[in-house]
Image (tube, rainbow, N blue to C red; front, side, top):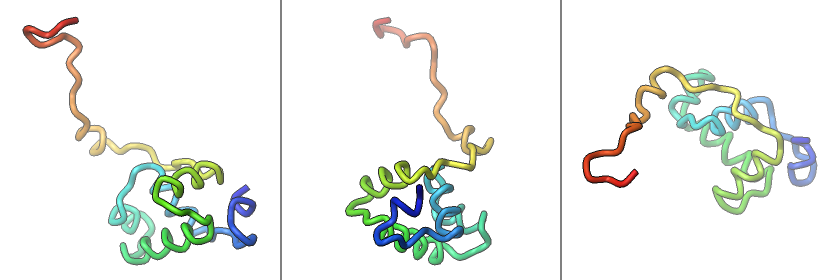
Length: 98
């Protein structure tokens, strides 16, 4: 399915797919680079090349094409990521409507 999503049959490389899986999971360039043992600039090159291969016109279109190509997030949230999420109170604050 990934090959069909690419323009002119130029398939994504395994490295590009690995980067896109992590990007889809919400990872930043530095985190992706650490995971894969490459430089952040290399991650940027993989993303730029994947955008060209998929024919993405904008960042939003790129996200759509990634999902359509069947690339799913393969990296879950880490405990450090969850700790940064804001706490949600179940009871309304004083003076707020329920």
